[in-house]
Structure formats: structure tokens, C-alpha cells
Length: 156
Length: 296
Image (cartoon, rainbow over all chains, first blue to last red; front, side, top):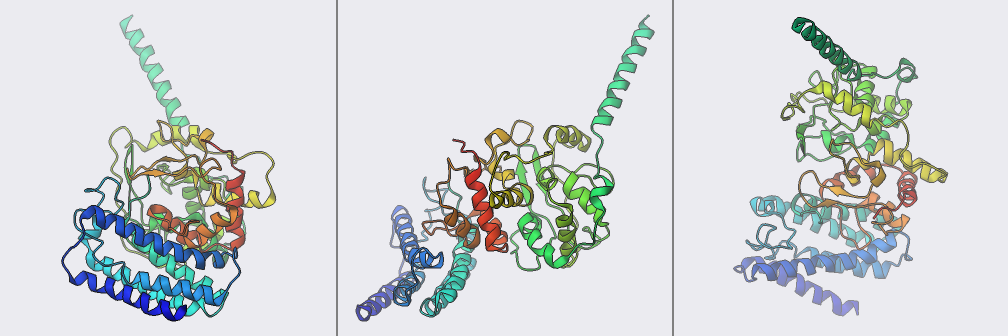
């Protein structure tokens, strides 16, 4: 199982990494839908790790490692071409991406790199023990939050 | 006859003016509250975090770390004008030359060393309920933080809100003498009430305000307009927030919601501060939120 999953994730990650090289392929509305799905997928894997961190589910190194690996794979793709011009809060009614995001792509790139680092550290921690997982959760949360704080419109 | 009427009128105006002068007079803390053992800076670090000083007083875009630079400069929009958080770092431009008593009067009564009123953008209606020893500890910690030479910016307030003296009337209407959540609550919720109502001043954003900017305590924590214009600040009474106590405590620790989205906006800064409290204190805040009356 794990054997099969790794190449699949690597392929998915590579595809996402390759994406920024191509021209903007998504329509703004499609880009918004896709990035929101992507975020929810990260939330799903984080949910496995977080439920263990909270003590609501028994810690299992294998389950935690699989979730951490999937999360790290997804984190590779957050700076892909989901961030299409014309998909900010000013352009689309239910978009929550603030226009500031497009004004400082360098900073966005750094924040995306911080998320990759944090999720890679989580891969290490998730298989170690519960305390390590709980500690790594904090840095992943900081990385998510740093970008949301700067570039996501608060909920209505 | 006319002269006499004019004289009487002038006397009434003078008396009225004197009355206004008296009721708008700033009231510093009683000496008994200010005096006490010296502050403990180490203990003060957690109180400083709970009080959320850095979230408003750091420079715009700055990060909150273990030793934040409280240079001020962030702008806060309101229906009355724009307030700028001042430099409160331990420097000549900040509060470095102030005595502990002067800082306590500022924070717990909204009274400047000059005797002038501060505007209630500084949440002194909440800080008025902080234990004096906690405040001395907080000040001791504040004095260990890095100094900043930044000059504080003036507020941008149109007339008549530019008349500071009028804040005296506002204080008479709005200074809290007691807890908003009354009645029998558990010892854990009581501790949570102290953190939420006095130190962390949750109500300042999560409670709607009346026409004069005072908190509508009948709708305590029931959500409010965001003064910045971005969205709405959520209802965190049990009617608006159905998370478990564990979920609330974990959110305050990590910033993760129960579905593993993260805190955004101003709340992300609050979570950074709440993450510095003990797990017991975060659980206490969660217990308190569950004890607040539900308001739709």
C-alpha cells in the first residue's frame, strides 16, 4: 500500500511543481475552486494529525506518517498556478484571496516555502512520537496562518 | 433687566460648564491599588501575552516573538476616526520614563501622566478588572522588552471626538465595575472569566457596540461588525460557537479550527498570544465561553 502511494504522491507533486512553468491554464473561477479543494485536502490530512495531537485519536506512527507524507506532497503545490490574476475578492464574489496576494508574489513564495519546510519537518516528527507530532503541528499551523493572516479575507 | 437676564444666563452657562468640568475629570487609581510588592518580570510574561498588548502595539506587519518591539504605529479604523497605537516600549519615546503608577493609571483607568484621558481604543474598561499585582508583573516584563525610538502618531479624529475631555462622560457611562458574566460558575470558568473579560478583552471585538461606542453588554460576545469593514467578527456565545471545550482550547493553542482551517485576520495575532498561556488557562477560557449566555 505504502509502496504504491509514494510514487503516486511524488508524481502528483511533480505535476504541481511543473505547473507554474506553463502559461496560466485555468479560468479564474476554476482556479479559485481548485485552490479551495486543494486547501480542503490539506485540511483532511491535517485532521488526522491534529486529532492525534489533541488526544482524540490514539497515536499511530504509521497512520500519522501516511498523513504527513500526503500533506507534504500537497504543500509542494500550493504556489502553483491556482493564483490566477482576476480571481481575487475584487473579481469574484465568493473569493477570499485578497488582492494584496498578487502585489507581493515574492512574499507569497517565501510563505509557501515555509509551509513546505514545516510539512517536511512534520514528516520526520509524525513517525517519531506523539510529542514530536504535537510540536510539529504548531509550526504547520504557523505556516498556514501566516499566509491566511496576510492574504485571506476574514469569513463573512 | 436685559443685563440681569444676561447675567443669569451667563451664570447658568458657567455653572453648567463647571459641572461638565467636574464630571469629565479623569480619575486615577486609588493609592491602595497602586502600592504593592514589586513586579515579577518572569511571571509578567504570561500576563503580558494574555493581555494581548503586542497584537496592537507592534509595528504594522511585525511578528510577535518572545521580545516584541512595542513601537506602535498600527492604525485602527472606527466610526469615530482612526486611532494609532502609540509606542509603549521602554524608551523615552514610549513609557520608559513613566513610573509604575503612571502606567497603571494609563492601562487601568485610561488616564495619561499629564492627567488627560485616553480614548477607549485602549481597552481600559477591561483592564480595570485586572489584579493590581498582575499588572505590576506585566509592567516589570514590559520594561525588559527592546526599546524603540519611534515617535507615536497622532490619532485622526474629527470634531467633536477630538475633544479628549469628553471621554470623561464616556467613561461614566461605560467603565465596568464588575464582571459581565454574573452568577454561579465553576472555579475553572471563573479563572477563564478573568482571562477573557479582564486580560484578553475578548469583548472589545466580539461584542457589538452602541451609538457612542460603548459595549452592549446585553449581547456579550454575540459578534459584531468588523470596524475595518472586512466581514463580521463571529458570535462566540454557545449560540454561535458549537465547538467542544477541547476544540476551543486547541484552537487557542494552535490556531486550527475543528475542521483544520486556521485563524485569520486579527484573531491570528490573538492566537499567537494565547499560545503562550498554559494549557490550563486556555482550557479555562474554553470553560468560560461555554458558561456565557447564548445570544442569537
